[in-house]
Length: 187
Ligand code: ADP
Picture 1 (cartoon, rainbow, N blue to C red):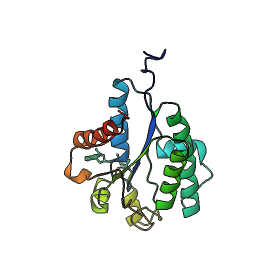
Picture 2: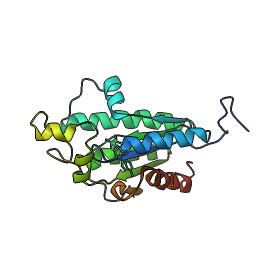
Picture 3: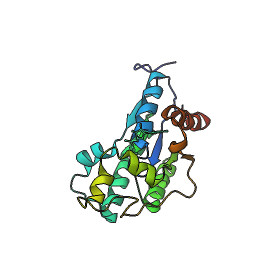
Picture 4: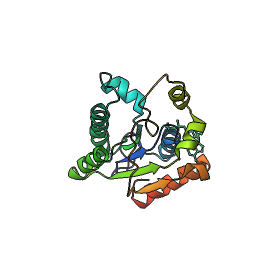
């Protein structure tokens, strides 16, 4: 049985939060996974950190309080979408353990599946990749408060999955995350 848009009825939505340092590989994995899941018929939404900030949190900065508020807002939107059958991929740093826990609790309170993936790329590798030149700008003194360098990053102690991208191709990382979703009935 299918719904009018072609999504098989009863497919389970859920949120996959990809946490990690800047340039760890969160967006690459989210976008690649979204493509694969969509081609399998899933309804998928990537909540890109920069886009959501611009849309929902443009008044917020990068203090602890503001980062927490941003994560809470994204978690709220993710939960709403996931509750309606969407697979929500969230490639957002979310540096503080307690705000990630709050998002997990919010999902649990509504009976919505939630998985936390730690994209555990070491800071030296991230600084080398430096996709958005943030690390270079921090070194040059053009910005401060860079997560993992001069701002805290509380690595997850017990994530659902840890991905070590420095030892993997993008394709291998995608397959690793997809296997977790399959095991959880989300893919
Ligand atoms: P983030 O969203 O965490 O800031 P990006 O995904 O934008 O990081 O950038 C990560 C970079 O690392 C990309 O250029 C990507 O091609 C590269 N990369 C190398 N190996 C991997 C891997 N196994 N998984 C994900 N990204 C990888």
